[in-house]
Length: 284
Image 1 (tube, helix red, strand yellow):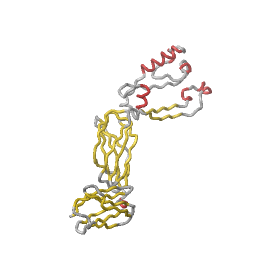
Image 2 (cartoon, rainbow, N blue to C red; image 1 turned 90 degrees about the horizontal axis):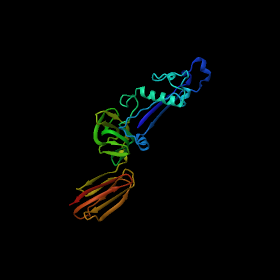
Image 3 (tube, rainbow, N blue to C red; image 1 turned 120 degrees about the horizontal axis):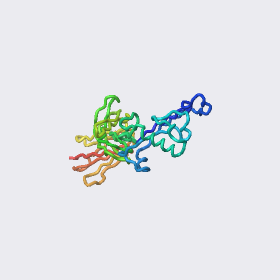
Image 4 (cartoon, rainbow, N blue to C red; image 1 turned 30 degrees about the horizontal axis):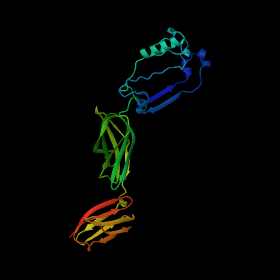
């Protein structure tokens, strides 16, 4: 994306004391806005490789500047130009010619950002955290590093996702942290092809350990203990052929006896609106 900052000063500063009565008394106006580069490319056919130049003019009507007491710009003396349309065009052309341009790499606070991060979020689910983000534009993007922290200060890498290098459309990316803390801080480190890096904001994700289902299978006593953590939970047992041999709904700690099952391999499925657990076990 491109960021444009425009400062329009009170016109009194361009007037002499004798002309002050003709000056505007409006206050200074400051504009600061961001334009996605994809919009510029779609509407004007400009790519990130095309040189761009931004110029400013002190007046919409050139005739009000030429021959007036306003300050000259870029060393262009308006007295040398006729107060005509042709003279205005020549003055403006010379202004562009002699005004030194700035590159986006040397300017401060301006230029094409390497990555436009449209969305960055973390979704805790089933004891894992899904880190998801969307880029609206990529330029020379090498890869992302997913970093996590226990205290929000000391981060370490838990994985990498390749970038697309150069793209002007939205791209969805994700990464799963299979071993999150109860409270985990995350951030993205974006690495350019030249090795420079930028960091995203930090997000805190919380795992609700108390609401998770737990269970244990006891071979000796041939029973299964299920704690649904006060969630209405279904428990189903299937044989190796996939046939249902036992099912029930529970909302409290329950002991499920499987002494009456024939020898063989079975699977138990425990699920509620938040979780789904599947585990195989053997009946001897």
